[in-house]
Image (cartoon, rainbow, N blue to C red):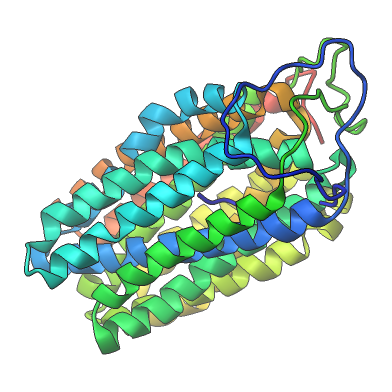
Length: 423
């Protein structure tokens, strides 16, 4: 879903068809621009993030309290990451060929139906762990369609000059949903159990589907002019920007957040012997830092540049991750700063990608980036979860910090030598 500005309202009757997006050969007309797309895409992002966060937190706690090992939680996160890792690139190519709004609608409605399977099964007295994995797999497969289509929709509907500002707003909406899902979700699980929250997740997908429907039909296909600031565009619409390495930086942010969530659950429950309430507080503090940083991003990027912010913030977050297991007080004090740094890094890497990729290839690039991030997260999750189960939880945090810092430093060094690197 996800995930995270002012083009003119897209007029016309909404369509339920999924016909191909026919290129307008030789046409220089840009799609109309305005604020309607922003007003609808941001709420859709927020409610999708809210529902997904609640689903994942509730499922993780459900699995951990029944299975009792870090690896069992790790497998849940892997179940949520393997389908997108395998399917995102395919769905990204589809999003560049067919109507992106319709693809998002299909994914939202199907996700709502899939999300209802787990609570209904629990009410019928079925076992929780196998179905939790199955539902997570289904929702993840549908998110593999939604993620590249929705990101390409942003590139399609948002004016180029507003992409940086919209990226910050997108990440605020994305993390605000996660923030509430952890804080409210953790408290609600403590008071009522997980079943009502799984029902709520299905409702959030329907709200997102409504927002996508109201967005209206867009242009069949146009090739947007690239922002002049990139200096990487070509007359054919291709880009010489190092998209693979920029995508790897974005994927590293995904590793920090996904693998960090896995080991945080184990740290809170096993390392500090606390429950869902403290875990919700930790996630909420991280979300507060994330949202505050993203709100300041436009001002900071004008001074320091996207690439510098991305590199410094990922490495800085890795340093904080390494000290979090020392004590609960250290975790509570450091997590807002870790959230702020990863928030800045996500907006920076997202802005670099949006500015560098052509609208024609946006689905494919974001699909590939999503696949890389989730695939890398799955590998790192297995590694750090095994370290946590066979040694101690602190070593899992050290491993995560070293892996993400090394990937970032090496990638940044190659980008600095690239003639097409953006500031």
